[in-house]
Length: 291
Image 1 (cartoon, rainbow, N blue to C red):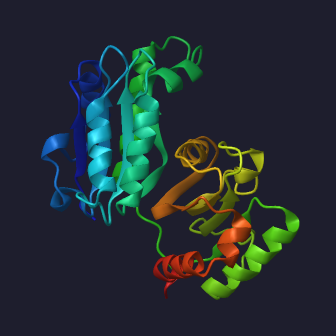
Image 2 (tube, rainbow, N blue to C red):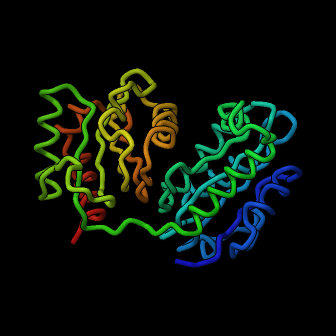
Image 3 (cartoon, rainbow, N blue to C red):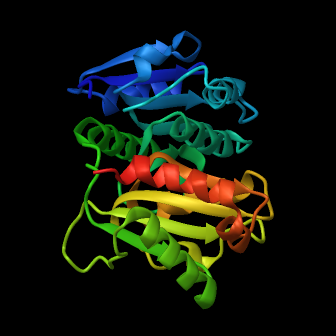
């Protein structure tokens, strides 16, 4: 993996430029405009998306960049990513940043644990913390902490302990546990061995559009690399985005490359019974856990 952080500049920066100057001090980095980025720049890189919203809280460039990844025009294999989304007016900047990280993941990037710093949400949550600190000081501290984690991060190696987590009803959960154990040829083991580099496999189901408390209740604040298998009879993008947001808030897990796998329009029972989707799952797991 390349040592230097690739800062992908998205939008016109005012405050964020000052923040990045402090956050990246002493760290090797180079900056590229989003519309100049190519696959050769992204592969095997440490990528920090730095996006500034306009006065309405929008940044159409983020959506354009995500669309390139989704169309397969921009691959990010071997990369690890994080994002800072700067804006004080609300709008769609946080949702667009989550969509960008989700698109980068679909293009082959691993996503850093706690990979999104979004000014309005994250600084508001820290209101009153750190006496004598201004909001700018807090912003600098959070951004600095993120760049240091990105700079020092080493991707989780494959072939380690696999931990199965299923937020399904008992009977269906047992059926899936049996099927997944057969597919990966390993037992699902709870995290009692003291290892910090687990591969965590979470199977959950989108029936309401938003994840309930079970989706991340068991992984909790685990460390390791997470793959989310989402049966999605309710469909749409909201569930994966909300689940990704919860992962950042509640765990110290990285998201495995192409690790948000959605079975669109199918329930967990239907995926289990549908041979083409089970074959797709088999291929994904063989690629992820081979060796």
